[in-house]
Length: 352
Image 1 (cartoon, rainbow, N blue to C red):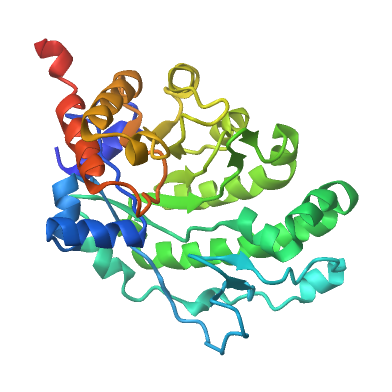
Image 2 (cartoon, one colour):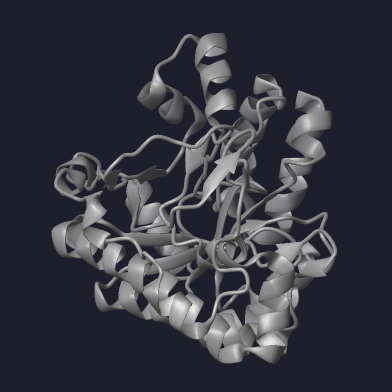
């Protein structure tokens, strides 16, 4: 099978030749792995056995100088400071009226350049499963715009204001992804979006609040992807098990990443309850096994996860987060991917 065939077979909840491999890593880890193994980007992905490739629109928005102390600015104009994306320096819609929300300077979807995305996707189309579309982290943007405490209060005291913020944010993301899919939908397989609705100890909102305010926008993005015959996969950190039934009802095809150390994310239970309805991607613990383990313990931990998750398809194997951290030993990541290839062959059980 090609990587693309392997991934789409798993999405169809059938068993391919082997479990598909997923590799997501921080820039810092990726640079370290390239130095250690003396490989460039594509040869490194081949060495790891990654069955996915991802294409991006390019940020072509008008640039203006950052304020003192800011390290970056979000697409919604929020300046941030700190490592990576940092933390917001202000919450511009905190205390806003409904009119002020509507009058806010919302971004223009045309700021994202989609002109090269189809050619980039077609370069891999016949072999790899192609991820595309805007990441669309609307939950995080709403937090930045309103402040997290005020967002929760608005859900009770000013639901129409929270609805308006979410509508404007998702209007932008849906329009960007539609532009991407109009330009390159025939060269993309999976619409990959991301919103972290979970914490280490459970969901960040009740199932009722999720259904009222956030699920309609998740479904809007799912429906957009399905209109272009794409699978839709959501990255969601933490313990979000109580939200999974609603996600499945909305038509979501895949969930990444599965963090087994979080409350409610027992792998055997997830597989039994939802494994025939949604693809799970990840599940090999990046918090403890990959960072703190040895190649031998990583190999054994990977084997145990595969034993639970791979039967019947509906699983792609990889770290339990899309951002393997710089402190993760390269040899442990190699051990994980080598073990996936060793133990993730579906006809092994027939031969044994």
